[in-house]
Amino acid sequence: MKVLVEVYGLLRELMGWKSVEVEISDDLTLEQLIDILVSEKPKAKELILEGSRLRDYVKVLVNGRDCRFLSELKTKLEDGYVISIFPPAGGG
Image (cartoon, rainbow, N blue to C red; front, side):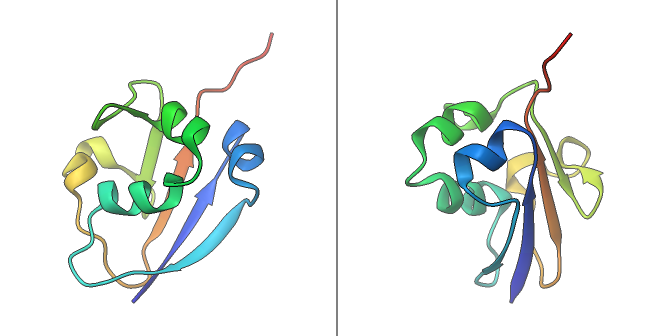
């Protein structure tokens, strides 16, 4: 099974890519996927997660739906899903 992960804003710089296709196992959760993606990127992990929770200002969409309206980080992923991660935007 594969999912497509897209990152935006500062995350693109931290991760070094804007989208990547990830091979996943059955019953993988959004939390497990994020852990895999940021395992070697501590700054990205700090930006996305606060302990084991998603930071309030980060938006994570699963097929265009905010994960907070699904099962949050416990959302089960399936083949072909698109995961989009949006850090806070700054500017003025």
